[in-house]
Length: 410
Image (cartoon, rainbow, N blue to C red; front, side, top):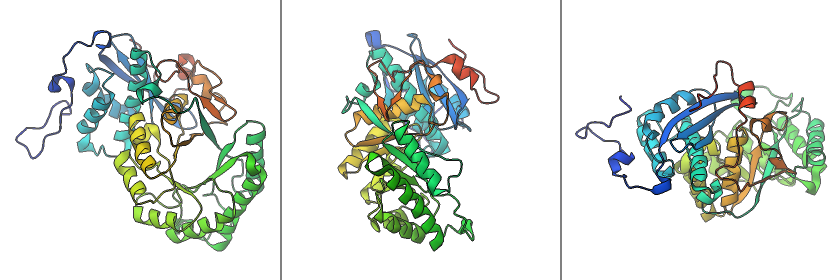
């Protein structure tokens, strides 16, 4: 298929063309009459592959974004380039829908297509904010808070050792200042017979409960502690584990079952008083809708540079608010998408926290010129235009993934 053309109007269906030319959007916007001239990507080799996205304009304004993560994302963004070059970066919603339509034949309801579109969408918010001289949160309707709570995804050398987890929890609270943490529970217990069948034997559940007990008791009321299962267990095992954890002060239990079957997810969530968080592996508002409308989740956890971008996350948050569900944004990103998530968190009433996954990576903050991004477990929302961050090109170049070359600056 030629991605630059519409299908024959006499064919079975025709993709909607939401380009400015087709829609007749030719009015002079004065200083806001800006055109996109290019979009470029590079992959940075962080603790995850971070795909940085830059949208260039004829006004000299460049927007920075980020897509989740690596892989085929740059190639998809290359194919999306013809659909946004020549367009006005202020028309974020229209361009988002335009890109979704143009990739519909590739399955743009989910997966890497939506992640690639998300990266461009974040960059459009940065560019639009710079053109209009307003912070990104203002484009989302204003803010509820000046700073957003950040929870630290914690790791130890022996993640299966309950005492090691408790020691690290205490260190992160006392030395790093976080009051919100997360640890993994999909770790070997030494009691497994067959991990492939997803079934948890009683000693395995006891081991996971011991991690939870020691972490929550160690931090006490100084911090909230969540625990991640990474979609690892059967429905029955997940229910047994969740019930076992009801005795402890668990902030939430994350992704206890695989993400595909919403009926099972609903059953697990409704079987326990332990709060259940889900959402990082579900795409767009349509994907999150069933979790919310069927009350299959206590906390929704979309990933901004994966789920569809900042405005799509706003739509998810609005739907969640109708069901009185808080939003805890999953995030394994560089400072760019982390700040985009924080900007969303500032603009929604039901923001619970944004994840931070790079506390062990000494150069995470070096990727941008700004410093002190996270202070005592909170991220201050800058009043600078757009996302409020400036890429440090020397640091980006130093940490490029193998085979990557720097942006070809215009």
